Amino acid sequence: MKLAPLAGNVLRRVLLDPRTLALVLFTPLLFVLLFGYTFAPSDPGNLSLAVFMEDNGLASVRTEELGRVTLEPQVGKAFVEVLQDEGIRLVFVESREVAEQAVKDGTAQAAATLPVGFSHAAVNAALYLWGPRTMEVDGRRARLLPPDEAPGPVASFLLDDANPDIARFLAQALEQALFTAVANGHAPPTRPPVEIRRLYDGEIAMLDYTAPAIIGFAITLITLMLTSVSIVRERAAGTLTRVLIAPVRPWEIVAGYALAFTLVGLVQAGELFAVARVLFGVRFAGSAVWVGLIMLTYVLVLQGIAILISTIARNEFQALQYALLLLVPAIMVSGVFWPVEAMPEGMRFVSWLSPLTYANTALREVMLRGRGLEAIGRELGVLAGIAVVCLGVSTLALRSQGRAG
Image 1 (tube, helix red, strand yellow):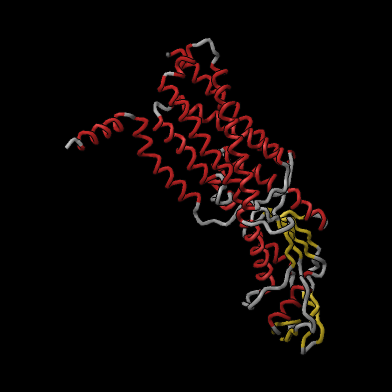
Image 2 (image 1 turned 60 degrees about the vertical axis):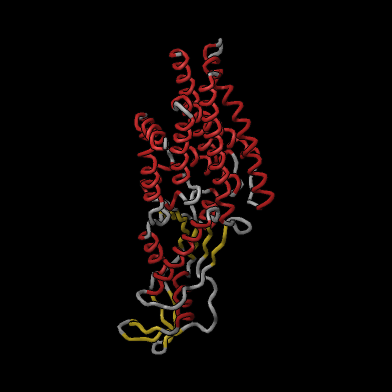
């Protein structure tokens, strides 16, 4: 049996290669740590609520003993205090229009309008839904009676529903805050009625939210592995070495590889977008021009990273390992499946170190919200900067390899 010597020879090569050994030992550990920290239970953070507050804090209610009396429940004040305790950042504005415009502009995730009679409406709605309540009024015990007619909505909320998870969390937080503000220590069976409106026409499904990120991830997977492994294979076959000693500048080599594989990546991206739209009806509210520009910039980033990987990897196995080392963390921290806002605070910082986060954010701005260059300028600028740096470093690495050869 020659099985043992063969296996021993393979293991010896792995153990004697520091790069391969490090990849084998530390890559799984990195994946588990990222998974544990990224998906740790956490409510969405860094959320803003634009509040138009007119509530005068007064409520007129009927009683059995005293007739109609005026209370000062200050439901609006209690409502905003509960939300602040939940960690939601409140921005008080001068009108309902300004509050809702903040949601449309993307500077707030929700808007709340609390009219002058908010406390009055909330208290009477609670009495109608939950029944009479006994409390002390002007030093006397009085039984508060419900109104004769069913109440309408006591407040109006507008939600940015581009992210279904965030919209669902905010809707629950707003209703629960109102419930807590009105209940005042009691445990009524139902919540006061509120008007919750969604910003976008038609319901945005989870598939609509995840599709842009899935497409970005698929392009990352294909491009990193295809480019890095192809270049390493050409180097092993001697093709790259012959090119390096030919009268061709290193930047021309990098540009040539980047151009070729960028065209391949764009064809694949177009195919994925077409299938997502035609077969699955994925929401596409924006311009295909901006989507194309995002993908072009992002694929150039991937080319720079892949070419850089190919200059470091000694063989195809290492190239695949390096690609996975970048790919798996990217899918965990870039908001592909789990919203960045719902990650622990430390991991949110890590997520913005990944180019895929910027690509995902820009694609969602265009596809879900229908926005243009004014909304994705920052993401495009960061991606372009990363592309320039990676392609430049790749050029320097190839130049040094050419001199060494």
